[in-house]
Length: 207
Image (cartoon, rainbow, N blue to C red):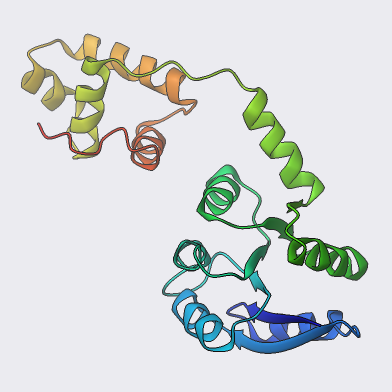
């Protein structure tokens, strides 16, 4: 018998999953609607597999996965999102698998059994995305000056303010930013700052 906990902030989704998991070797022993609640329920009930949504009000699924890393249960992400900002952090945090909510019943049941056996389980779309990440060439690192410019931009500085702070021209600031965009694979200031923080590039930098 595989003991399951369902984590999703929508009651109708949890009810639907209970119906999809009606099988002789499955037993849904608990539910949770947030990351914090998931950790508490899993700690109390000790399930074998946790079906974890990612984006929930309050504490999210990613934080729960990280906190359950040392728990013997397997965490199988079940979400509607398959972007890089969702997939890669979840896998790195310790998720055994990553499925989308349009996964058919039979495939979901097979995935749960595979996850319980310790096998990695990925939906085709997620597997394709991860392969793309592996095949992409390593991105060129930002130079020290580009990081200086980006750190000031992250604090809300205009190009003129950045130029004054670094004793360079506004044209040079724009050039540095264009290089930053190309290296980070983004097209604007906000995205550059977001990606830089996500990758830890601005950690500890103060101007």
